[in-house]
Length: 114
Image (cartoon, rainbow, N blue to C red; front, side):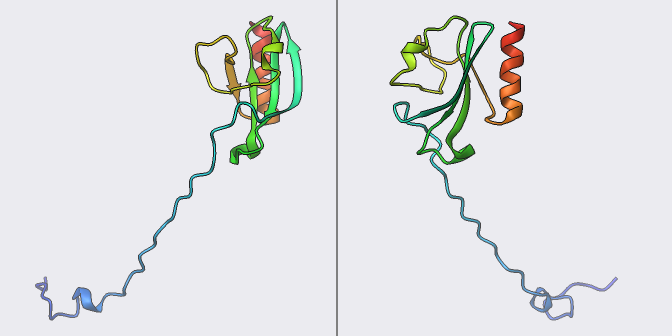
């Protein structure tokens, strides 16, 4: 076995230089303004209101959210404010799903089975 030394051919000075890759992470706006929304689709299944909503200022999923509300929920409460986050007030959704055709199907399936 050949001993290692700074002067040997195995020296780190003779190794190829590696590039340092710096990755810049940019956070996109993902917090919706609950007063700035567009209802794209709305359906009531087994008494559960389900909405496909777009929040124009949100970038992830192009601002789309699928929201499900409690059975027999008064949707008039959502006329000027629709917050997709879960909280203890009376106008909170009970579930959110990925904003895709599959997510909508999951919402329908849940509503039909509750």
